[in-house]
Length: 258
Image (cartoon, rainbow, N blue to C red):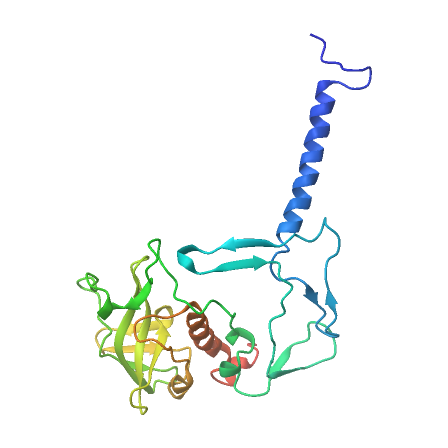
């Protein structure tokens, strides 16, 4: 059998051309799909909206049905997040650093910034809330031999008393502690959640040190609405507040290391 179709075209050539066309189409498809979120672009200096034009660069809107009756999400939607950044630009060029004008931990500046996530709890494969207090999770206990932080004193980066651990919040899907519920010292009835991954437990001294913040800064940490669940948005706020403390807790942390 002769694979030659004409004097200049054969089956091998057609296969190669088909592969090139397929690959070109794949590139266009991926470039369209990766523009579903974060677009249109906005010039940070002038505020001008720069929308990628043409059918080959902008994906058509697609609607995703969220599981467990959590509605739908349509992207791209050309919606602009409302921005009220309490900071000023330190110089007049794109990409210049910004400096906070107030309390950056509360205002969400730099590493303390948060995303506007869904105001509903994270759920497991069965649709149940993943992160709950261990007191509300029958069947879950702390492993024998591991320290139980409940009742321990919480110390800040300055070594001062920030509060006392009242409960621990666990991730039922990953089987680990996510947050420590801290009753803030000096403020009766105020409980805040502190990320467990930022805590260091001293079993012998029965203390928990969270060096992300000074003891006095625990009082301004975000407070969640419900007593037994935390939403994705609230998780974002908690992580941002404590994470931002590694830069903004003290003036020394904001200075360069020489």
